Image 1: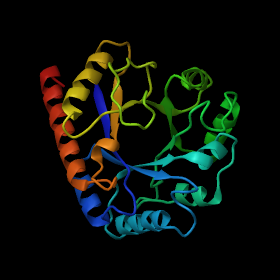
Image 2: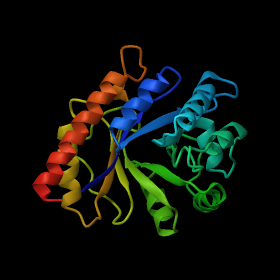
Image 3: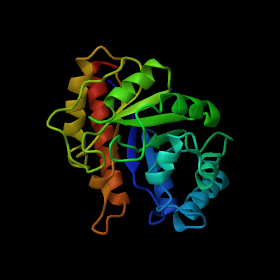
Image 4: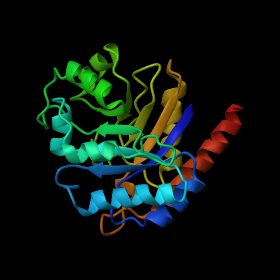
Length: 256
């Protein structure tokens, strides 16, 4: 198993930029996930301004970090109809110090049956990807699995995130073996600083016994929040440390 990212979801305007960037520099596998939607990040709102401040800080200090944009609600529904809202387009267009996209991965948080998304949006999403030229992250759950398979067969470039609780932060009874042989596949649900090592062991067991290249990542949010439901950098540091230490031991045992 190859661990590509250790994702800290929920970074936002309550997160200190200097401390966040300093932490991410300590952990090369670390990635931030920023949640956006028409309600979370309206034009001129605190979240969009924070994202712009983060971009400026990274440029001013000549630093690059791993960052993903997690797109929710009506913005995600619009994407599945091939429409990119202007505020979202502005975020997608942001560039890092090297002139590359700041957000290299776009997570489309939609669930068939819950959101206003049709199960025949295959062609729309493929055309959309050619338009905005970003790799998608798609959440694989009971409602979406058939669509995910079809998109894979039709050539969409995406990373697959297994989260049966769909953002509720609940760990599944067992970790799902990868459905695909050759794409990056992520695991979420019930991952905290304390459980990261044991959850990684469960994921490694599922991945190492499957016919897959084994490139994976983990994603935590609920388990990283403080008593005010804001991201705790203290918990993030512990999570990144524990996951990184587990992976170093895993590679040593595997001889890689």
